[in-house]
Image (cartoon, rainbow, N blue to C red):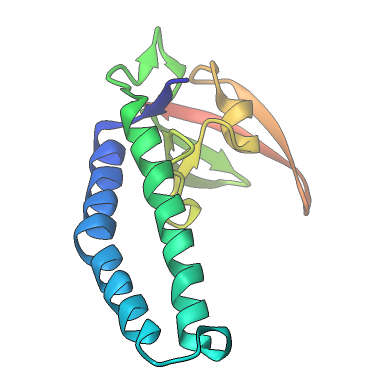
Length: 151
């Protein structure tokens, strides 16, 4: 199954994968090896912890490899002026303007104003045009958004 990502998003995933494989995994394997030398493994907490961390790290590496292998770089952000992955949108919320970058779910970072097309807001914005209004249900209630621009 293809995973939509922006070019920058794919590069960030590749950098993370390289860091995990080239630096973090070898350091963790060495830690595990050193912990193995400390005697009885059943009572060696560092060995158990290192083993669990290595399993988690290997899972993340496999996950990243799969995403990168199936990545589809989105090159056209706006199809006929509608919102899709790669678009930068300016929204008006309660009189204030906010800019968001619509990204694939692997790139989502709400703090950096990168929202996934599969998030509640992303779903509501998908396919919309400048001038459209969308309502999104949030824990605080329904929030109304006016779409001011799409780049």
